[in-house]
Image (cartoon, rainbow, N blue to C red; front, top):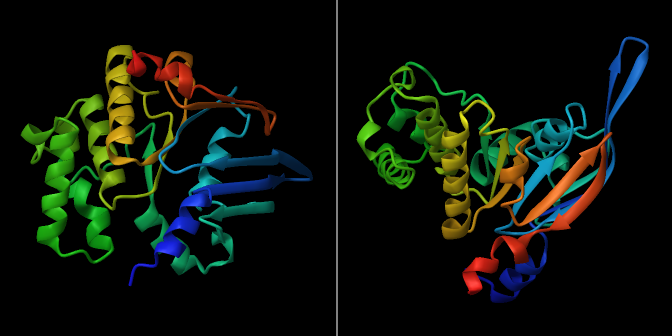
Length: 249
């Protein structure tokens, strides 16, 4: 069933292509323009930081990339396909299978254990429970929580809760993880440790990450830095050579 030519062609196509993306909102008699012509690509396995002042459009951009919101104008292609031409049902399935989300506030379900929170997206996709449990157990071990599988969110620290959220985001082996201020609610040391974990997962799993952050130190540890200002890209800078320079020594 595998088509080598199709696979090779797919690998040459950007994971995400954003073309002249615009998003505006009507507020009373006013139209507020949040995104004003964003054009960029995201490659497979890339780790990208998006920075900018509050109101620059960072979260709006992330929500559109995750198909949680629709653009007013412009296109977002995922592996060459315009996902916004799909039905809402197809979009929901696409999100659950191909995209993972990590937010500043973890959004874990308080009545479920860490293990149950992590494997819930797999159950939604009708993955057999024993397979989902095995995958979630492995992921929670990967993020350092093998000893906390049966603890509920209220029994976990903030950093541990975010690690559960990371495991949940990865349970369906997504191509892309979108993280909106994932360290914003954590102290400096815990935030640094979580970021190191995201970098490790990016490198070992080959999952692409787009991380919105106000943390300048962490943003400079990614492959690429995109600076938004007034809904436009002010700077799009590759950091990969400097961030991995020590690897070649």
